[in-house]
Amino acid sequence: MPSALPNPCSPVVVAVFSCSASYPYRSFAARCCSHNSSQAQLKELFNQINGIVFPGGGSELVRTPLFYAGQYLYRLALDANDRGIHFPIFGHCMGFELLNMITSEDFDILESEEADDVGLPLNFTSLAPKSRIWSDAPDWVMKILATQPVTMNYHHWGVGVSRFQNNAKLTNFYDVLSVNNDIHGRTFVSTMEGKKYPIYGFQWHPEKNAFEWSGHINHSPDAIKTMQYMADFTVQEARKNNQRFSNPQTEYDTLIYNYCPRYTGHISTSFVQTYVF
Image (cartoon, rainbow, N blue to C red):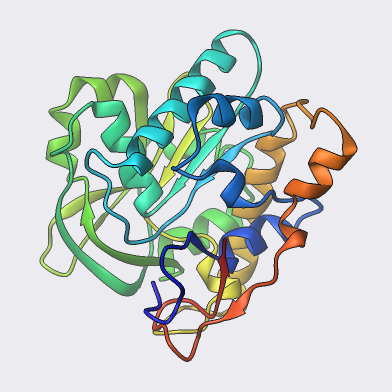
């Protein structure tokens, strides 16, 4: 994250919020669900929201408060879904890695991958066309994703296909929908979804194309409209959950609109705007 931000702080990139805000939906401030919150605070908020995005970033995950907060929310989501309450979780990049670490129960599940500042077409598996993510996607969405370098990758760690396949907890829980190769030819899992649960993982960044301007991000019309499909899917999944805040004042106090993003493009090579809590 940008070095000029105050320390300690909880920075979150604006693009993550903007991606869902591009559809008629509202985001709550991440500080209310921070890794420093108690389990009681996390559970209270969980019961009032409609879904969670574990965003990308560069934070340490192994045995950190961030990991344990994410693990607790993940377990709450599984329990809610088991009780018939649809509750989706999405993981982008680092969030994808967090999901794999939580589900596998293996802090060493990640391995070195080099796919930094590169757009890639997805190599779909046979499961992709029947997946919840893409079963209703127009043909043009699938064609663009499969043939054009529109999925933006910014990662040095990932889950190799062999390592994924050798972990029964992962193979029993997720379907692999796409794979990709890094610059050294190593094949990694790039998209996955829960077989039973609405848990979705993207090693790439659906939010980057429309809202970030650094590096070599693909801003083509095809890239933008394809990622809008991904944003629409995210919101439609959240809309299947009917939870709401306990009272209007709590909702107003929690919304992201209470905070002003900072321009960080001049001090960061990755993020144009950042929320600091």
